[in-house]
Length: 156
Image (cartoon, rainbow, N blue to C red; front, side, top):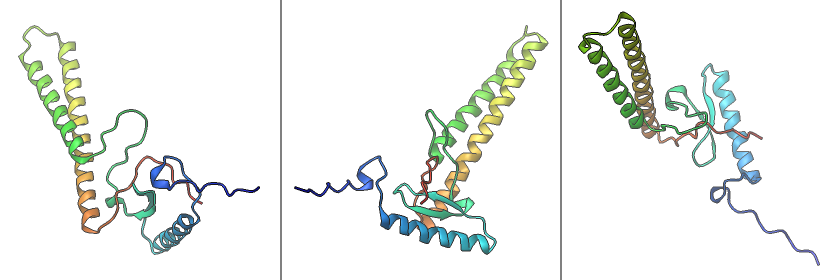
């Protein structure tokens, strides 16, 4: 007695990627359109969306990439909050540096270095936050899906 194996669950309901010939066909269509854009002189990037579909984005539509391991800040407002906290820390170190009376030259240079490092980190967070904010506005205006950043493409 031969039984047909059960159908795999839908890809949206599982963390595993099941073979979907229709998805592979949609991916091929997107890759052909992507190659046409590249041949026309544009520089799009192929990324998966949060729904798992392949999409060709322009650089300004992506925002920032959240790659690597560990906790991530994945939103523009989160980056702006982190930048604000770094600015507060840099200003606190700078004011402490001028407020200390009996510090040696080496201690003042160390505080100055830490304040400059905090300011540079704050600028970087602010830059990423504003880039994500602009990209989110562009995606919303152009009705584009949100990219899934930091994931493998799994191209056919």
